[in-house]
Amino acid sequence: MPNNITNRYNVTQKYLMTRGQALHFPAEYFNVPLKKDDVYGVVVDIPMPQEILTTMVCFINGAANLYFNNGGEYSGAATKYITLVQAANTLVANASQLLPKAEKTTKFDLPKNKANNLFLLTKGGVYKVVFEPGYIPEDQPEKRAVYVLYQRVLSELRNCQLKENAGLSK
Image 1 (spheres, rainbow, N blue to C red):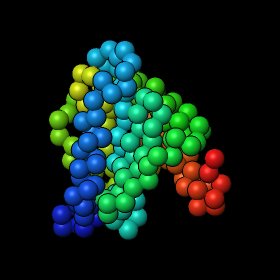
Image 2: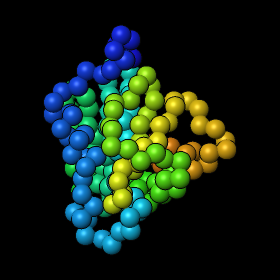
Image 3: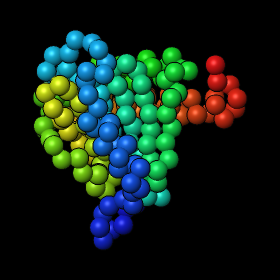
């Protein structure tokens, strides 16, 4: 749990720079026609035990990476694992259903307590939705759906790590 006095995570400069680059990644990179409100990227800040903050970044091309507040990262798995590409692409393709519940933002504060900050990247700007841990109301099916999808991407990333650690990468 973050320090109760500041309610903030200790972060490295590398983490802040990488997270900032993800939050400002240009849509033009993907070379696909996008409307103003088409989501092309999803950035999720996920607090973990022992003061670890994980930021998961997924893009429309299926790329999915993890960045940690201590400067560590796990990236490049999408070049080897089609199941990860599919999960990340599905998340990004379905994330636009959250836009009506999202708030346009230019501030990218780190999460407070155990909340998950989810940022939707569009050509029209960045939108933010906060997920409180452990409870998503039944009357918010779009939040439930996107939550399940980003948990699936996390699971696929973990599976990729386990395969690589066991020497099973393709």
